[in-house]
Structure formats: structure tokens, C-alpha cells
Length: 116
Image 1 (cartoon, rainbow, N blue to C red):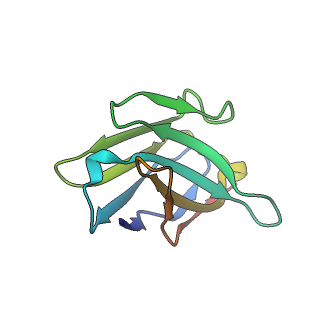
Image 2: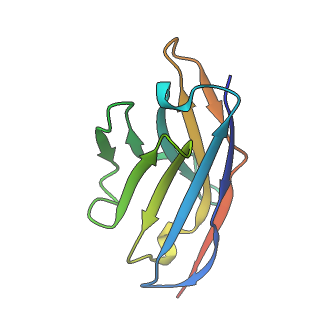
Image 3: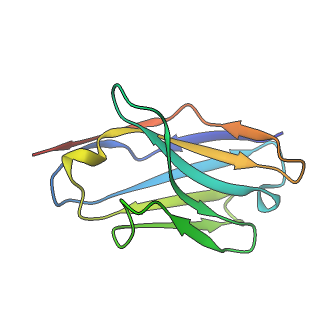
């Protein structure tokens, strides 16, 4: 199974940008579909972006055109580039991996706070 560790969160002003990273270890990273989720205070966790093992991507409507998911299987890392951030993007961001047997693995999250 893969272990996932997120980083890159922090405090940023509205309109700013952040890049989140999620590093995987303990398994063959390239075999996992990877995704980013987020959970805002008092809200359910929601899907932000997905990237397949083949590099196909999909995004939540709320982040299309602002966020970009990418992966580097040599570095065992998936990224989330977040631009034009707004206070509504404030949340804990989680990385999730899905293996070929449809088992899921989660990181512990990284906090993104966007000030107005």
C-alpha cells in the first residue's frame, strides 16, 4: 500500500497562488489514480481534481480554469497548482490514491487558508 504525505499549504491572500504536493511511498506510485479533495470547516469533503495513471484529468466546476493537477511518477508526486485563490477555497486539502483493486489511501491533509 502507498503512504501519502501532503505539503505546501499555508496562508495566502485572495488572488494569490499555492502549489500543493503529495509524495507517495511504499508502493508503485505510477499504478495509482490520484486525486485531491478538500474539506472546509463545517462542510463535507469534496472532490477537487483527479488525474489517472494515464494523465487524464478532471476537475470540480468550482476550480476549473484556476487549479491544475499534475503528476511526476519519477518523483512519486502529485501536484495541485492553485491560482486565483478566494476565501471560499479555504479548506484542508487531502491527497487520495486509488490502486488497481479500487482500494483507497489518504494523506493526513494540508491546510490552505485564503484571506480576503
